[in-house]
Length: 183
Image (cartoon, rainbow, N blue to C red):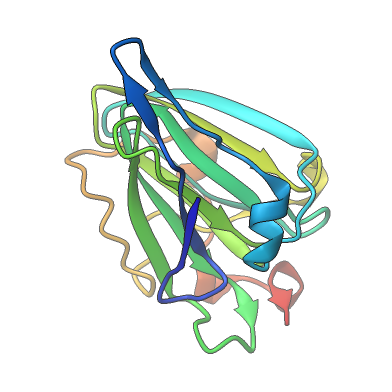
């Protein structure tokens, strides 16, 4: 695996070695020892899978209680995966990184605790799988509006399809201190 820092160094791109032949392909999508060598020491306890259609935006989500680091991959289709730094006191607070993940590239994105996460679907449909370092806790769930004007994410889509819940999320600037992470 090749592991590369992004412009927010705690977020990492992971590129597996892919072995292809006439039968198809094989790759390791997770090896704890390799991630540990790169400074990723999370233990993952929950796997999630979603299927979404073109122009869907999911996010921006995080948990303030039971915070989750995530290892995200796109099993089918193409997504734009986004991580927003919401760690108070961080040099990159309010900044984001975004990367295309697809079944063709097989790249993955590691998103540490303290980041809001979301993605948009760029293909007709996409199946996304991600590992989480803690269990889902609905009482601790928080989010930031997908079109927050201070973050200014280019989701690379025409007309977003959103859940009612995501449409009603607050702006980062209106959030209480207790709803953000401390370094």
